[in-house]
Length: 361
Ligand code: SAH
Ligand code: SF4
Image (cartoon, rainbow, N blue to C red; front, side, top):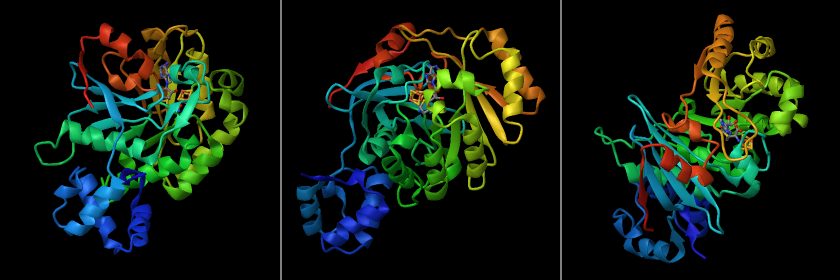
């Protein structure tokens, strides 16, 4: 079987060439072609000897997940539905803004954690994505959108907020993160790469040691009783342990705060009392809050909080000097769709004025 070079971070690619009897610097050359140039054809890699190019064409490939469909929204956001084989698909979403371009990517097909408000969780866990399937989302999206006017790749920020729990696919996630940060590949700063986790405490500690990028933690409740219901992994790693892990992470974090995500569920976790309890919970943790109005899906037991409830909740946090943003609702802002994903693409297409393109592999 051919070795997909997108599966190898700098370390693994160097080992690959050494095993082939080639010099280690070949890894640097290849990385430059693959990530800086976005090249997938060995024949085009002109500074590499023809004999080695032939050898690579036999034994290796550069292959990202294939795209089943691309969707363009009026506001410039793009979504790609990526084929993961055996009936599985994940989604990557590109959100252009004036000063940056953000790609939201997936780490697993499905998710085992079954948070009660999440459609990915309702699908159950299917499998971990490989390194090539994770970094391939970035590689493909950059190539597809094309370089900007300055000649740079358009994606300046990556958030792992798509399908799956990245810290339960730890090794592949970290290898993909290393490629995002590696100067020979994308050279993104650690502040511009965010991992979102539901709170896998031991893996947060490992990430802090191995690759401390910006961290977002899906909090969603101010006490264990409620969080146990909404985010069942809380029964294993309760809030006291989670908050302590956040403190430890901050020692190495590229930003001096943790981002807490908080999905706003009507009448469930969105009262002023909840907000006050939350302020007490995070009193010792430098943080920002991102309130996410709930995105309903078929058979979901919740409703989105009313705008005035979200506003009141936000006011309580702001009065306690916690910077709080509210994510724009779905349809306006594609980032809100993260965590929703594949099965719903069709619905969204009908609801918003977006254009769907069939894709040919
Ligand atoms: N598994 C990771 C990352 C993927 S989910 C995590 O849970 O953090 C990305 C974000 O989308 C999380 O904050 C998640 O709680 C949120 N999310 C999931 N389902 C949602 C829904 N139906 N409406 C709004 N946000 C949702
Ligand atoms: Fe998994 Fe995150 Fe969805 Fe929970 S919110 S089920 S951890 S993807």
